[in-house]
Length: 391
Image (cartoon, rainbow, N blue to C red):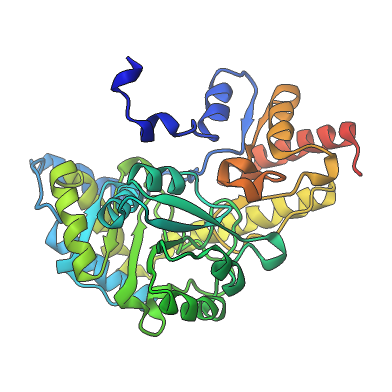
């Protein structure tokens, strides 16, 4: 049957995250710090809005772009929370932020194009670029620079074939952020090289140091930025599969046609739930989001302090809910460290190489889990590190 599989699909490596998840599912007593998913239940008022929509029989398709009232609230949300002006006419409600990323890449990529991807980064970017027919080009973001994109590293990676750059801060897996000053440093390079920006801001609300700054809010960048966001992380709505994208008119038009043919519309009940999340947020200052963010920040401080104390040098995350410690002092790479830790101590982490070559001496630890699990996991990791010894 291999003759029926296209080369792009066949060339994709299996997910470096899923392998460990699958093992954990069948391992009794295992603790997983691998899942990038809030451990909070979706707030009741959001669930109730979906239930009420179903009881009212609102189970039909919506318009392709999504419910008008939801798109209007999304635009208000982006303006008030992040100073990014958006138009409901150029906003698409998507099946999670993941669909939005795929739409953006398929809308712009031609064979021979290069898409710049700062690494370490979310595992899906490079495969989606490949599937869209372009070539992913890594941009190294070392720990010494706070895992941020620098003008120098960006210039090194750019060739005449470069068409766009994917920017994703707060970052998965490092927890790094890029504040306004750091973003302003790379804007001249982006403008000089005439790059489109795809800005994945799914963790925008989970920023612990200052306030999230969208590159689309700076200078003239709104006109060349595709802004992607959603409800999964901030509102604990991963399974609802609801996101959105606000793009410049020409790019939006191409994305919309792909969305029309491929998806038609996001689930209606999820759209009603998302609309309730925003409406209630406007009314109470997004208190639920604030409470979850404070809890994540507390867990993050605990985990980073614990990892550093046992000898695993760890950058202090400023957003998202991940720690990305280096395991270099154990004389193991991230893959070997994670494999042995799971086998010997039943703790699942994600090897850093899953997020690009720059992460190969790291592992990713999610702290979107209970404090009791974090405490037990640290005890097991500490015992494992003590067995290895440190150089």
